[in-house]
View 1 (tube, each protein chain N blue to C red):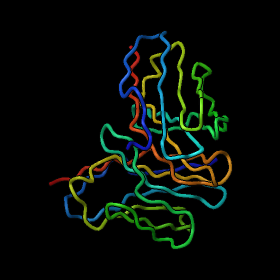
View 2: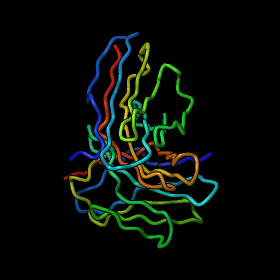
View 3: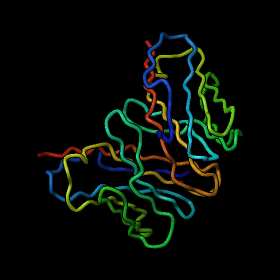
View 4: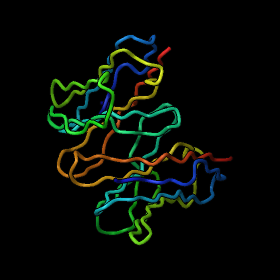
Length: 114
Length: 113
């Protein structure tokens, strides 16, 4: 069964500081990996995705993530956080077959101190 | 134009009632989904439809019945509502070929009193 672990429930960073959100996955085949962001009262917006190829993927809003197969990880990074980045971040894993099912992690809530 | 829309945004109702949530996507996608997000923000897939055909049914109580009149719409009907049904329900859609990103609606916050 596929699963995602986001070990940090809450993270607080200062505006302008760098950010790394951790994501570990379990999947029996080649994983398709996603990071979504959810602002309060909003739906989920895709930040970036990894399907294949270059293991460092760039996304919107200055975010990037690196796929490390040996560590089963797909950590999200941003070099300089803005106050507007405060939100809930979800990592998700999926794969071929089974109707494109995504399994989400429990999310990391990011707070940004001004 | 909104890509994936849901109505209503908020739904407050009494236990035992029956209610429906509607979802529409204008992206031309073949696959649509319903997710439930509980009070701890945990997101879990409930159903998936591909071209009006049920693909995924994740052991959801049969009080929940999805209906897809066409591939642009996926509605969720809930019978005999229970307190534990209180959650935010998200509709999503994606292209059908292989695994692709899913586009989410704004959510419907259901509160059962």
